[in-house]
Length: 434
Ligand code: FDA
Ligand code: NAD
Image 1 (cartoon, rainbow, N blue to C red):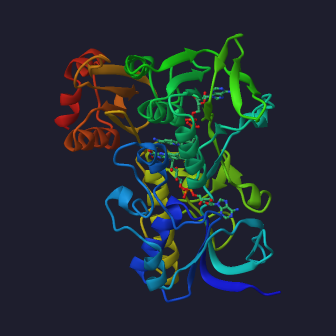
Image 2 (cartoon, rainbow, N blue to C red):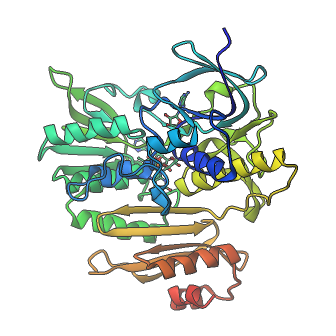
């Protein structure tokens, strides 16, 4: 049975989808040409809020407050906006089959959708402890955080387990942001992660020392160098204990697991070229299949600045890649050419009163500068990464907007440095004079 046909179809209703819709509207589309299909029940929102203000006691974020594009200072796209623009939001609809040759998607309920141009924006899913066969990992009150439904369940558990004990498994983004959020909610928090320091994918030992010290001063216990190997539950199936590989056992009323994400590419396995775990694209986010684009977390794209192809699981890229793909689709229709995507990696996080930003590449030698004492009333410190005599990456905690812009400029321009000692001494002032 023939289904609905759209000129432009976005699969996934997350950050990239929302920013793509705004760009389509800017470029000009007719009513009924564009649809977004999402398994979530709500219009695209700024996902980063889920691990931050969504869990706060004061200044709590709730929809419709954080629909895209407020996260980048733009207009908030409420469901009415899509209606006004003639964009169909097909929510609560999971696509379970994609036939790229026939340009057709099929939903779990058996609806079919046809398209002329497809943008794949399915994002990532969480890696689960049950994927590694950890015993008892399906007990109640063991949470993962990806979508708003997950956040709602966690909020309910926080209310139900007032002043209880929380164990956070993982020392990455989720681990650090969720430990802070649960501590603010007066839970007794213990973090567990296998590495010698937190966020090892990005942080140096020196950077991590500050955050671990700061968290410890807030009363968060940190157990490093081991992993959770099992959970026990009480008679109602609720988690009660976490067993660690080193033999320790931790009491727990709530467990939050953040052990990484996995891009959602399964629907397209075998029908589109993949690389580095994602869907391979060019600088316009065009995949190996004509009229099919991939953006956000799922895209493996050319990072011009480093002459390498990479995948990025952060919001700034989700927004920008979506806009680039839409511009490319529109330019192609008009026989025009647009500039290649030239992305400068930008990652950030916020927890407690802390806020850091990182730009560029974290490779090569590092220097640490500034006041990184965890007990400092106003900590401000950072790191530079130096490769082949050039500064290629910069991290700053506690920076002002101007200072953050300065480190971004450094990472983009990759200035030369003669001595790491001088760079350490100059610290932030090195960036401010570039
Ligand atoms: P996103 O995950 O946003 O959207 C994918 C959408 O596709 C979802 O709506 C999903 O339901 C839907 N979907 C998937 N498969 C489907 C199917 N088969 N059928 C229908 N729908 C389907 N980054 C950052 O730089 N700073 C930050 O502070 C944070 N904070 C943060 C907190 C939390 C809790 C998470 C989970 C992630 C972050 N991130 C972040 C990462 C950032 O949010 C992420 O990189 C972007 O949301 C990626 O945008 P996408 O649109 O690619 O995927
Ligand atoms: P992550 O990759 O940042 O961190 C995973 C952590 O879990 C690492 O420290 C890892 O070594 C550890 N780990 C792995 N296996 C473990 C085990 N068995 N037991 C204990 N620890 C284990 O991933 P995440 O924090 O889960 O985040 C998921 C996704 O959400 C990522 O795409 C991330 O970019 C995104 N996110 C980003 C932000 C941000 O940018 N501020 C915030 C939240 C989430």
